[in-house]
Image 1 (cartoon, rainbow, N blue to C red):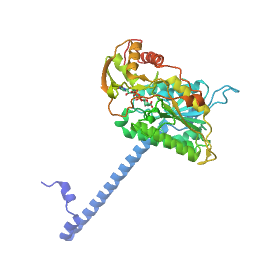
Image 2: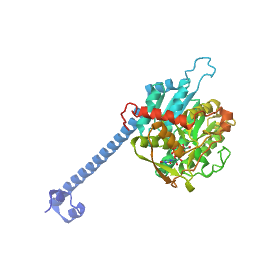
Image 3: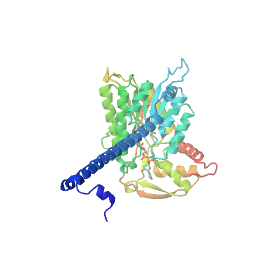
Image 4: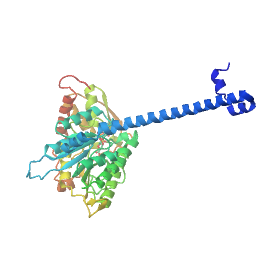
Length: 438
Ligand SMILES: O=C(O)[C@H]1O[C@H](OP(=O)(O)OP(=O)(O)OC[C@H]2O[C@@H](n3ccc(=O)[nH]c3=O)[C@H](O)[C@@H]2O)[C@H](O)[C@@H](O)[C@H]1O
């Protein structure tokens, strides 16, 4: 049975039908068709207008949510300026104080450094994208801690060049402490693109902003012990080979060293790269072994302990967070000035690389037994051969260069550092109150 619409909108072209019909009927049909097709065109036009209006609205909504709610505006600028203002007493021996932009400020090392800078009177503004690589509530808690000390953390990504340009517009930062990164050695096999996004593309966007800033800041940033890769000369020295990365993570950090070198060479940016050796401590990263082992041990779950070839234990030069903070602040204090302006350098600027390690590697089974001691719980160990996932069998830092040039001198051994970590962990997750809310 034919429906009414079939008559008004024939499936074959109306023009053919009209040609076959004749007289008044023909004219009527013609008028009918003409008005129908006009209506059809109007309907189409209206649909198109509505669609473009809706998509424009959603664009406006998204961008206003991002731009207006996250950053921008007079109030926001006032907060940034207040946070960036150094508060050292006038005539202080340590000078006037720095204004530091800390990227990854709600991360583990970023939060500790931001707090230390603020406590000694430097101005600090943080930026962090609060991604979900690990529990963002821990990052929010670090942000709240920083806020309680007057450090403002902007929610944004280092890939957002407009945001970075705006920050440099509002504050003439003297230094950038760049700690935002996609961390983790093994996760690179699961999500390789996130390493390129943060550690390569994000780094370049940040360096562009630094290069364009007037005055240009000095840049201190986090490289990694993992750049030593398959190097087997120990202890690892800055002059050793770093062209054999064992993971994509390591490769992106090595790329960072080369990229920063080119910005130093062309634009006169002062650059200091710090090769961190397995940093641990309170407010640490839940993805790291010492942290996840603690969680599992307390929950009575098994832990997987990797072992190297021929049953050799893996070892790391575990470095306590307070020592790393001293190395970062020492690097900021000794960083020479950038020399560029308007995209041109006026002379050579410093380019430095330092190991920041502890100089005393400890095996993973020893790490576990120290944790067992402080937690007073025995671990259920599941020992397996190290999978081919980017891990290296051991790390060991030679820190002579950092000692000489930064006055870097680590003072916390793994036992003392893990004791502090466990104390923090039990308190943060409510164990001391018996809540066990993990
Ligand atoms: O120095 C760095 O530059 C890097 O340090 C850190 O990497 P790693 O030294 O690999 O630390 P981490 O994961 O704690 O594993 C420690 C040990 O436990 C072993 N390990 C690990 C997990 C597990 O389930 N079992 C296990 O035995 C594992 O085989 C290893 O032997 C940072 O995460 C990284 O972001 C980067 O900063």
